[in-house]
Image (cartoon, rainbow, N blue to C red; front, side, top):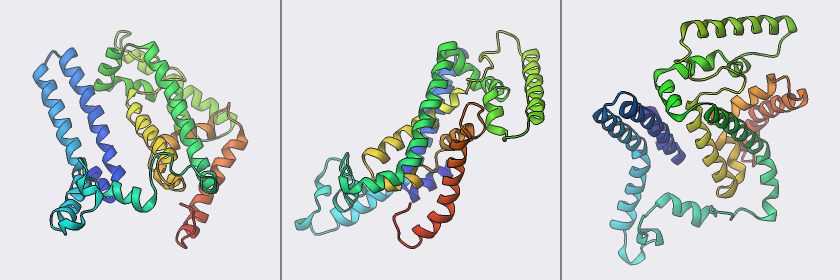
Length: 293
């Protein structure tokens, strides 16, 4: 909680991390109310989750309050800035809009086309990861009831099932020889057998197959979807590369493409080349004030 709050003090979008506490609180509150039949525990969980989320937002609120006190209250009342008169006076939002031209569709100009092309690789990967994991989550919801998924997630059983699935194998493995693949297949089969033996059929909530992913992936996808929408339609699009680089689903999707048998090897090489170019070329250009972010 403290680390996420510190991230919000460095960048305003760090406050979005409060959503993970909200999601966790909702899962545990549902489990306490409907599975354990303890409504007071559910209320306690919700209050705790709310307080944690507010704590993550404190740096953002503190910056707005600092600006309002120094500029709007202690400043010259005859020269109040327009944002001081707003119902919700947000200093940062005014600076972005007034000085940087940030706003919905305001960056959609012909002269900004090179910047859209610069951001297209990471935006494409972000959209792919959102679509890919949304399909997996939809299959998960269609094959299991919401109640069972929540209970299994809180108890940790969905994570154990996920660890024995092909998805986990894909994300952890590297491109290797057929012999290694065969050995991995045997190991996966053994893990599946172990999970099936140790868990009753009634307790095995999530079916193990190649399209399984845990419900805990959902807040990551929602977070990435919001950031991708903001980066493309609202912000200066060229900052999308570093803006979205903090989102785990992008790297999950990239690794999936690299090792998936159904994916073209050329796409895997392109992704590797892009990441290497971003590290080497991007560091050189950005430090010399060139538009590569």
